[in-house]
Image (tube, rainbow, N blue to C red; front, side, top):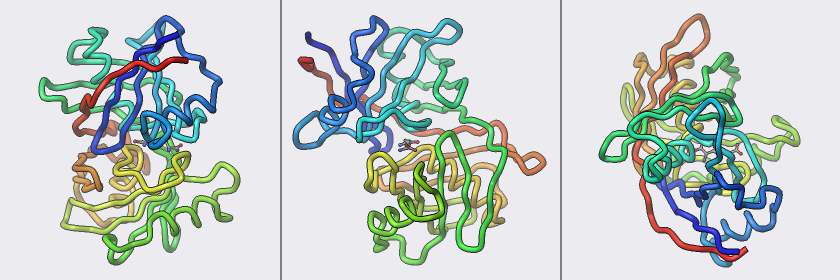
Length: 260
Ligand SMILES: N[C@@H](CCC[C@H](N)C(=O)O)C(=O)O
């Protein structure tokens, strides 16, 4: 059987998107997802996302990491899926969708900038050398010197597989401050098991962690990621963060067919 796929990217975090409203994709085939995401034997992507029907929202998001396993929320993937839903005619400039971490609202401008509401963050754990929080996916956030030359893959893997996070592991973000409201980050992604060019839940985690640490006064933070620029805004309230929005570009790259 032939299945259409669409490749999208959001600040260089790239995804294979499949319209699965007719149940065409075999959802438990870990090996198939892993092969499709493989950059030498497949299409190549950091993850694969299915767009499915949902009774109470515009669509449902089902996310797989490139290791072939379903995982937690993907912020850049969610933004790409909104652009995909628009191209399919499912939405116009506004969307609601359901993902593993609950309900999301989003808007998309005519030039492809997607603003995606992320889950509220109820707890920010501040430790001596790092911050941990869940923005839909778990994130370790650590300020470092010389981010440009930092060994993200090696040091990220050591933390992801280390004693702090047990079997589930965590995504790991290394950060440096650029100005009062701007930070650069590089992310080691769980499930990709490598540095990616951008991570949306990671950028969200860094923005909130920097606010919680008092590194910025601003409730709107600019994030330089390896693949571009993102903006995260939020409202702090009694130790929590609500109205959290992740904003940035989401773009179609190419489409094709796969035989399964
Ligand atoms: N790239 C994503 C994060 C995807 C999930 C992550 N790899 C995990 O399994 O925790 C993003 O843009 O948020």
